[in-house]
Image (cartoon, rainbow, N blue to C red; front, side, top):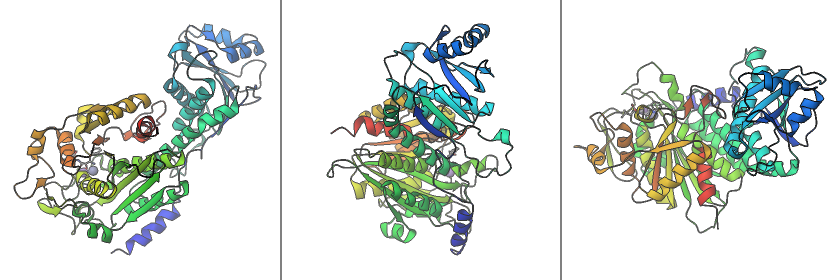
Length: 524
Ligand code: BES
Ligand code: MN
Ligand code: ZN
């Protein structure tokens, strides 16, 4: 039976699954402002139609075409997110001038610039442009400084420029991303480059995560995902793969029970980054990596089941985060642990009512095989604290459909046993635009998962508070370590484009947790 795996690996190689990805579409560079002879040039206009320096310069070059366009367009005011193209401007050889609304000078911040970079990429790709110069001069706007501002624009552009189209072999030209390179103009290109370094690493990490999450489950399964993670030793991460024998030895009966119905063997992957004080306890990041979730014997309905290829998004985010911490040489110690399994029905699958023994020693009555993420996390949360004695643990998981009912697709659910940790995560989420909303844990939920037959059961049995029940189950495996659980089922995949997140895999959590680490755990 296991012979299949080597054959799958070949398929996987033949299809050319490669490491991300970022930059494979668009080149980003910085340079002094110079009028290009072809392509598009982007200039900024403040709210109430006030031209920035480069906009005035182009206005002169074109005999007033810029101010005429700005004054003639009834719906263009220079507010943020407004875009006004002048196609074939007089006296110039560029194909278009793109006038970008900047809003009010004192409202400009890093996020607005990222969004602007994203909007511009979407516009230019829609217009079929292949190169562009961004000459968005913010003048005296105090923050962010020009170098940082240029870097933020480029970052937003890269985030939005991401595409997962490697399996679309028959795309018509107008379906492809046209934009090949952008140059962001700034007075000090070297300074902008320096400011861009960590952001470029972040964009690459986000693209790496989006690639993993987007791959279909015939290509990305526990072994192949583990191989992808192993390749991150190139960026300096130490990577260890635990196979099923090792897991059995460790007593990970909860995780192994989920994977036992699949012909693909399960894996646990441990990633370590040591950039902090050698004696300091690491931060622990834990991800649910169900490479496909059929529900198992408690099988899901057919409609929408294809979405369950992204049931490994939590693991994908942990991998991207660890890659980023290593790439930017974060001054912190961190360990990332992902539990990789495929949840399938088969003659060897676990049955509703089965009782498994988790690594913690607690027995679990599996009343619904579709509540599998919590079983995977139970063992790796336990393993993390036992082996690494972490300072804190944050897990990410597409754990419950109920969190989508509660919060929709704009907020991820946050659960925490520690106030400071919750506050820090909420603030980091706000800062990067990956928003969290805290939901409760409580004694009542804990009573609801007491089992008559075992120590705990994996569902509550009656309806209601499904996300809290899932989180409460996890809490039985964390002892008193400061811990937070992010239920990302509603935010891991997006059906519509957002400024810096094209539809599809979002990588929600990579930027949030990177910010969380940088803000609180890298100083001294
Ligand atoms: N992976 C699903 C949760 C999910 C649903 C993620 C929709 C993304 C979109 C999870 O394993 C699951 O099936 N949860 C069950 C739990 C239930 C059986 C207690 C659910 O939400 O229905
Ligand atoms: Mn499930
Ligand atoms: Zn699942």
